[in-house]
Image 1 (cartoon, rainbow, N blue to C red):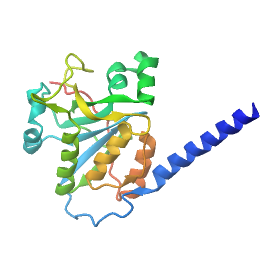
Image 2 (cartoon, helix red, strand yellow; image 1 turned 90 degrees about the vertical axis):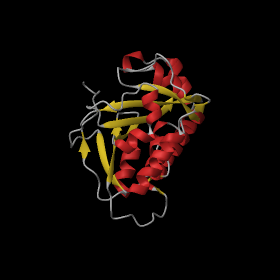
Image 3 (cartoon, rainbow, N blue to C red; image 1 turned 30 degrees about the horizontal axis):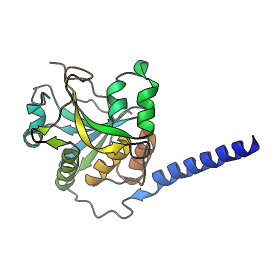
Length: 236
């Protein structure tokens, strides 16, 4: 029993050290000088286990992600203000739309190895501030690089992106086959962190949890952006 307790203690210490290292060590270690012109902004939506990136919708974004319109995502609705992107475990993301539907199978898949999906949703106007949403100002080059990263996350076949039929949380969202495998070490929040680094922001070295990602974003990106409301579905 003592050996088991000692082993559990070592595992706990290693986990705490990994989370601390991942949060406190910046990535990249050395940031290049930021462009003082920041004509763009993005939002990061947070819940207890997951983060999404919201991209303001304009003509250029609609043209860039026109394949989503072709796939049935109504991003050109007048009430739509943001395209919201998230990457995650296929079994867990699709199989757990609410906490009441949590089941062992999807949890096990997410903690081991699973295929991944992209979730695309729409948000209307977002009132600021509120704690579950953070706004970041970025330059044009960072914005374009982040869009490239998001675009590369979609699997494409001969017919283009592959929407998963008859799977959605609501009337305005959808799931798509995605590149990469999901596991406990490379999950939804590490995907968000990678996208934000493409945008020119600094994150922690490894951020598997929303709370550690938000800590590192606040630590290394100054001035911090205001908070805002959680997204609601587009209400036509």
